[in-house]
Amino acid sequence: MWNGKKKAVTFSFDDGCRRDEDMVRILNKYGLKATFNLNSSLLGTYFLRDDNFKISPEEAKVVYKGHEIAAHTLSHPTLTKLPDDKTIAFQVEEDRLLLEKLCGDPVVGFAYPGNGDGATFDDRVVKIIREKTGIKYARTGYSTYDFDLPTDLFRLKPTVHVTDEKLIYLAEKFLALEADEPKLFYIWGHGFELDNGDGFDLSSFETFCRYIAFKDDVFYGTNRDVLL
Ligand SMILES: [Zn+2]
Image 1 (cartoon, helix red, strand yellow):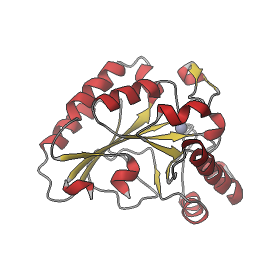
Image 2 (cartoon, helix red, strand yellow; image 1 turned 120 degrees about the horizontal axis):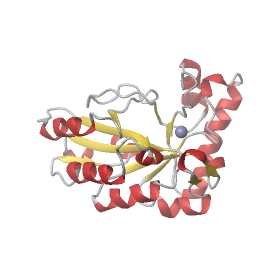
Image 3 (cartoon, protein in one colour; image 1 turned 180 degrees about the vertical axis):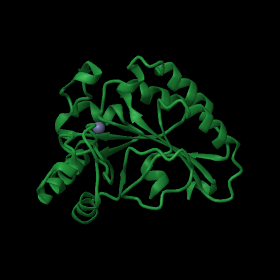
């Protein structure tokens, strides 16, 4: 596990926004690895929150080269609000299969889509994804602010959101940690949040990446690399 190291860092970003290109450039500069959760039927469509077109299906393989592509449903519905179990399975599994075709690699990861309209997952949704799709792990949007390894791969809780004011504090804490058992620093968010005017921008992201990178006792991997 983790090349014999006790600490690992991973990133997870949703929605396939145009800003992902800049994030990948920075991640690559610092030897960091991320997972990008994509809605295959929305790729290339206009994205209001980014005021831009999302990464197109043709670009995805090139833009995310060296990182992991994971599923995020076909069209970003709130899964708990879909009454039909088959529709839930289709939203997830069809997205997974289309992304496998696009990127040419196995797709095994998933992030629950959220629309600010209630719970993004429940026991029914988890059961369907676990039993009816090829997904092996699923990330939620709830931060733990700790570095403990997740106990439930289908209700994964990351450490912290990328624009959270505790990000650097947690990075300091993580790097200072003398770990006897595996510890994971798991950062999540969306590319478009790096431009939303709350003070956290691309250069803040680069500062964080520079700070966390190139440590001899840390393994840097995609979500799949660190979880499976
Ligand atoms: Zn999303």
